[in-house]
Image (spheres, rainbow, N blue to C red):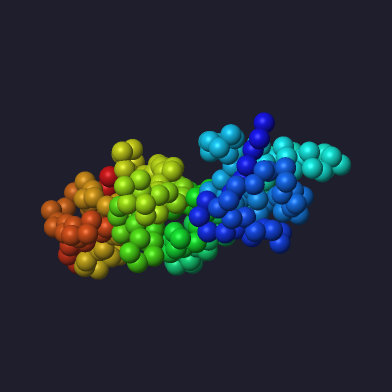
Length: 270
């Protein structure tokens, strides 16, 4: 079978060889060596290079170039494509305590694990610098009362929105896709879950307060107005449900309990 390879648009240079828009036979490329396999695979996978059979572009060209490289280096016994896949998708857990996380284009090999106790902002890289094959992963499995804000570069979007929020515990995976109508790249959510949070799960939150004097502000970052109950010590070894005003913030991330005098007790909300 005759397989050809060409640059999809702009010229691509790998290992001192320049691919142009003119197709050449794959077996004639002088750079089929293990030193160049990652660059070749990346270029094929992100569509900088296109492989065709009998002039028809292949839907899955990766095994073809892998087999050719292995044949070109008979002494190289391992499967280069599997090695590439393994290296590409291996994840290094990175514990993050900072409130601002700036993600670089080559951070796709990391699994960002949120360990801080406050709201956090994730600044995403420019979609034009990111390979469509890269996936960026984030998880918060420790704190149910914080919110993550994912922010793309100005003028870019996440599923058509300027921002995306992860409320409480959960995880999210992002990658870059291209809008079929406009041809513009954008951030796409490929995997998402809100774990053990009130969103759809009905988990009740319990907050104790001791000798609180006056207003009590609770930041919950749930993104909706929760159902709330306040109980205060009745001085007889039990608790009573006082008649208090509860003001919910317009952005739905907190509420204020208007307690009078000094009180101890607890708040339940869901």
